[in-house]
Image (cartoon, rainbow, N blue to C red; front, side, top):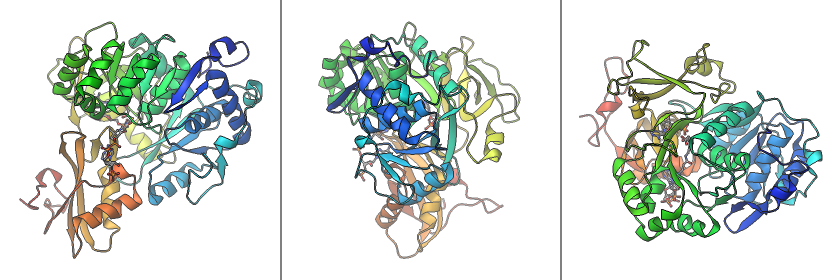
Length: 478
Ligand code: MLC
Ligand code: AMP
């Protein structure tokens, strides 16, 4: 099967109904693939193309066009600040930026106005032949603990394996209608939420933003398989009448961050659905999940999907028993694992062993029955806020670029809505916290800016002079 399922000659009967809706615009499968074939004809032969990844049909057509042409697609977060954008465009070598006319304003490679591209027939789109399974479909930029985001190389084969594993785990079929409103530049919204729907052949309703009332309204369009990050599910619970509308759905799926047990329980009480939690990463796609036909346990992320092996390692690298109690670093080996970080052989070698085991950096327990529980992260330097992964180092560097800032340390602190919030401890002269928040917001994506800034006299350091982040409190050095 092609990565995106049937879309060539003969697929028209299935292609005539509404396939993808984003907000109040929709296309049939035939229209989408015709449009994407036109995009493919424009970009064929490029090393990589960037997509200004707004929540829009243009983004869907551009990504599908890249896949048809066999050109790696680099989704650009639409709110990324100049520094972030420059890094992503430069590092990826993207030759063009695909965007609706007027939607993208930035320096860099030429803009291809996706909305002005007319349909080509499917054969024109496929002119270069079907790209090899191992070829790179997506380059997804994601934060590490330090420095600028790294480009995660995701192959067509990894996407196909990951989506087939999820289709099996969730009994996901063309009879489903997928509903979500997540951003189209990460695994959750783009790979599961768009490519998954296209590969399985289930219509997609993207609600523009992931709001409770929009999720509820999508039931009228047949919404059955709902995706959200925990912040979204928590907001759904805060709107009980919207939540109750979801009672008729088939499956509510949560992922990208830990689903708090109280949110699990409130959602179950309001909707009658115990949510399916699943766990994944940009580098591995989704590897562990509860099953549509099985048990769902609050606080647990389920068992490995088909083709995925997991193990736990201690601090010395040695094995940790799968006794449901002893925590260890979760390692994953699977056909869904990425092909390396672009231009970063050092970082790739550090995370991905020659034997194929990827070190996730997440601390987990595994029970004798195979159920996984994520208990934390090995490093305090990766923050999860509203499902977004944010590297402390990138925010610290942005703060340090301000002339008044002498030292900066960033951590995640608990936040009722977002799970964690970006919190900065800064040693600076003559500047207000609010000015620093604005300063970071101008350089990086909005969600990366600190929500709290503590101006302190000094940072707690160990004998080696390294900041001890576990000792950061709002009073500064305790
Ligand atoms: C929005 N803001 C955030 C934020 N999201 N700040 C910190 N952290 C976040 N996650 C900012 C907005 O820019 C806005 O700023 C202000 O907070 C209030 O916004 P809001 O209207 O309350 O939030 P909203 O825009 O509705 O966004 C919340 C959200 C969003 C939950 C919908 O964060 C989101 O879409 N998260 C999903 C992230 C995701 O898809 N992750 C998947 C990664 S893949 P201002 O200045 O405008 O007021 C992955 C693999 C896997 O993890 O396992 O799935
Ligand atoms: P990202 O690369 O943005 O996909 O973030 C991946 C990280 O999200 C993982 O390493 C985990 O820390 C976290 N994560 C994803 N899903 C879950 C989940 N269900 N429970 C806990 N953490 C999760």
